[in-house]
Length: 411
Image (cartoon, rainbow, N blue to C red; front, side, top):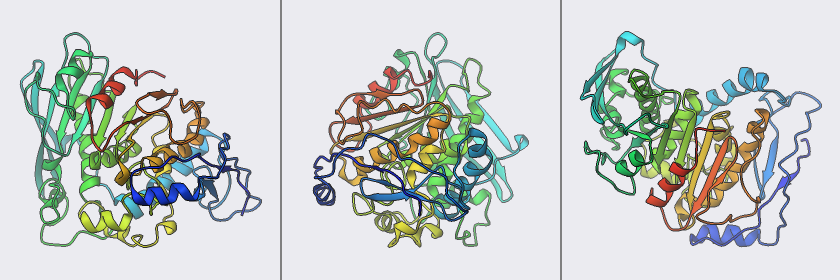
């Protein structure tokens, strides 16, 4: 095993009991402000680990067969495909195929500031459709926020506003806003999740393969199909679309952005387990076993084999964040959201930084690496953005304020 420097964080107590125990156990550790150092292995071997606050996680910059990565070319040609394959096989499942142009249709209703479009895809087993709503401000949009709306709560009124989807506020800030109805893509229900798009690709009378993607993977796939639609809309710059999701939608947004490099900005809001949180902090917040037991339709059967052994996962979530590089990864956490383990999300954010460094984007924007950072303050680097909102689980006006004022489409 090659020695690696330890990145540790000065802890703060969180309201979740399991977080309290984990944090108190490391209360005496000092802050090492240097990111992990990665000397090249002397000989090929398994991927080396780096230590983060006492948690060993796989190094994103070491190939599976051994060998340190020191260039964008090696990252993109070798390591990135390795990681994508590993996440598909072990965590999110095999994605639905990208449809040919002739198998994708957009039926747009309206052409003004608010329009509703039915996206229809044809698969080997038939057709499936879902809705994308688009709201456009006066003038040229500064960019577009695409929400994976797992609540199905975005309606047709451009004047509506809520903390979760403040349409009028987004438009007033000069941005366009789009929302896909995730429940139409894959119902968030263990008995009917295949009834949206999945059964257009798999025979409905047969079981899915163990490694086939389920709900979260289908939502991520749907975000890319929504981007296909936005590419056809006059006045919308499809190169300036940020995919955003909250909670379970945030898990899907990260997986969408990791696979589809057309998204220049990927926003995870309180995504927690199998989102931004480190899987190897399984004892803090929601565990892999808990999420698979409560939501058996979210992830493939292959992921369930790690229910009681997260350390055996060949990947961890900081590597998912790293797959978004050089696109901007944006992590929004909440101080009292113990179930999502905000400290685990923060650690994952920091551990993704070395990949951004390959692209010359190493600055995380953080004032220091100690936990917790100042709450309700935006931290912005050239390729990474982070904030820790005070309060609990939710996508709120304060979060949107940071996203809208964050100049996210500029380096």
